[in-house]
Length: 282
Image 1 (tube, rainbow, N blue to C red):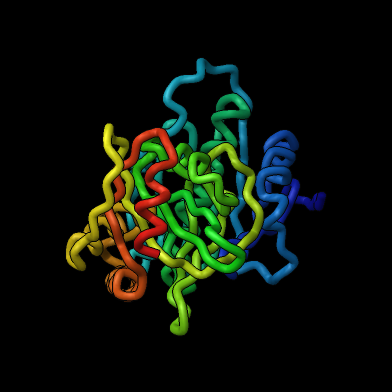
Image 2: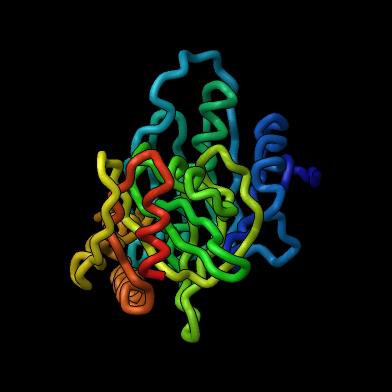
């Protein structure tokens, strides 16, 4: 644990991107110290985020609404926002953010994690990787596959059914490293407090719960469209529209990943029969 004038501090790393977070709430700090524990880093921080919290007894309702953004600054680099239980700004030129959160500890920690996801999503483009709404499993010592779907669509279920070792059950980072495309675990979302792992990505499966097990290859154009849907926040949301250079870079990354990794639509039942279909194409 590190304590300074601005509160409790820790640094963690996602796919070479290091964030230093400052928290004024000890319970929130302990939560993230545990959840991000396998991703703790001693690197120089790429970004610093400061969180001020106010504890309030509140009915636990919908914990996070979508952020409302107002871009400002050069090339849309400063964003002011307000959500149900958080408000503040992100300055992507100064590599700094400040947030005010309130509510129960559950509201506060979810607000903080949502904010950190947003920061990572934007910086992933600068660092040359993408965040995908996905679970990922290692199919052998060096290789992995991703299951992409919206929240509540079975990402964790299919990862568990596969019986393979899990990287992350809700969000993973994917990077084109020229010689191969790699997938990196992240500490974001889900109930699984992941381990910091990397593997060679051998396939991306866009999943649908069904009463039959069926595997259909994606055309290249459909694969691009589904990759955009699976990418976390950056590409498909208009509030980043002014950051045109970064936007185009994100689309190029999606293009090269879609070119380099087989893409499929996987319809699965809650059995393990879908594994036979996967093994046939890998």
